[in-house]
Image 1: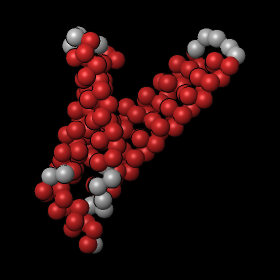
Image 2: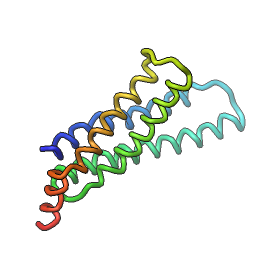
Image 3: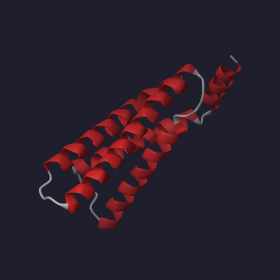
Amino acid sequence: MTIVLAAVLMVPVFATWLTAGIAWMVVTYRMEGDGLGKGLFWILAVLILLLCLFLGYMSATGAMGAWRGKDARLIIPARFTAFLFVIALINLVVNGRISYSPTQIVPLVVGALAILADSMVRSKSALAWLAQGARR
């Protein structure tokens, strides 16, 4: 049961990574300027898009693999997203402004879901499910 819940909790993480990559490309497209600066920014935008697509892919395949009982690849994107959660939390505390802001709430919520999914995959029942799936 914990594997199912962990896989379901990773769906918003998957969707957020895909949305972040597409949003970054839209921002880059609407950016003003020309010359070398904009060209370098496009290179950065493509790299960030590839990172977001890769993390979205890892989230989706990790959730499907855990759901089927094959492996615990779900931990990698969950921990990376949780790392960003910690960075966002530290940023809020350092700036001294723990208040509502859409740009700060999304990483916090998605990071909390990723931490829950990570802890669920490492639970005893989940490890037993994965061990049983590996024997099949």
